[in-house]
Length: 254
Image (cartoon, rainbow, N blue to C red):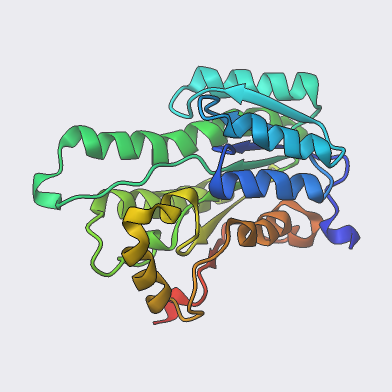
């Protein structure tokens, strides 16, 4: 459908070397967009994402950097505009997991989570909006988590939960600040998802509990975040801004 067609669009996806970020980057290309992939090159995943995008006949760009660096992000946006064209879609997926007993959690652990999950998302939005706002056009999508709305049973992760809650409210705040300047900002909150982290043998028992507690009885595949991302990137969501789209198999209903 033309409403969901992203042909002629240029997108940037942070944390696109694996998991949800990789699936979304490839999914945006499947919908017609050219995609700049931002993240770490060390594991080879970023280049793998770009190769799969090019195999679809779309253009791809890789940029190694950190979302905690405003300079890296601005350089990546500038390179994207130079090599691919005007940036119109941004998906800010880069983030880290965390956890531990709140009463003994080291300050440096807390700060690292907030540096990446909150400040990193803010700096990404800032760099992307710098080119979108003058053109009065763009869609920014921040990847949060259902953990930003609920507290996961039996998981001690006050740092992670609160950081994702911050992403949700940051997205709403930016949406309202930029609402009359043509840039839409929304967030997606995935539920438990079968990312590489959840495929490790040592967490197999925990994954079974996640499946049991999810009303649909299973974890999401990373590819199941593609549809929501394409929707929020496309003309199909032209009147949608400031929402948190929860994609959790019904988890937050119970």
